[in-house]
Image (cartoon, rainbow, N blue to C red; front, side, top):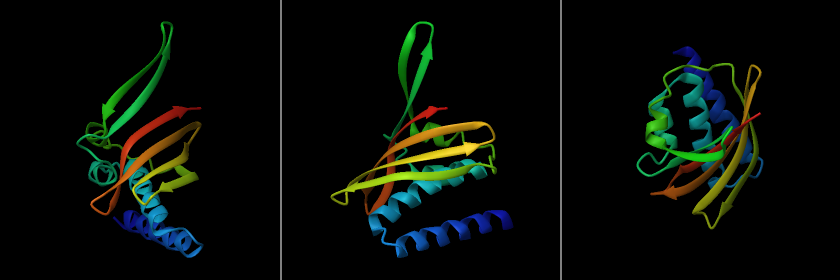
Length: 142
């Protein structure tokens, strides 16, 4: 439990630090939603993932390559959030870009690294009832 509080304290401190450096409230809200997704994966916390996602209609896109070619499949973000049951505490995150349009829609690009695995995550978010929610996620492994 102490570890969770330490991670959350660091998250809030980093968010406040970034906001103090000129990040808008909307950019900070987008960053908070993406960080909730990231921390949910670190902690194995499906409830935290559900808070980051629009779980009713949000979708994750999965690109697959095999001998027959390329395909894209979709998975509901609520179903994806339910899979957050295993901790991954050694992951790191890098934010590459956050773009907000009209205070209503945003995109974010991050890289997550753990061990010898690396993934680029791309997010589309909407501000719903005053709160930023991930409505679409696409990714690629390196």
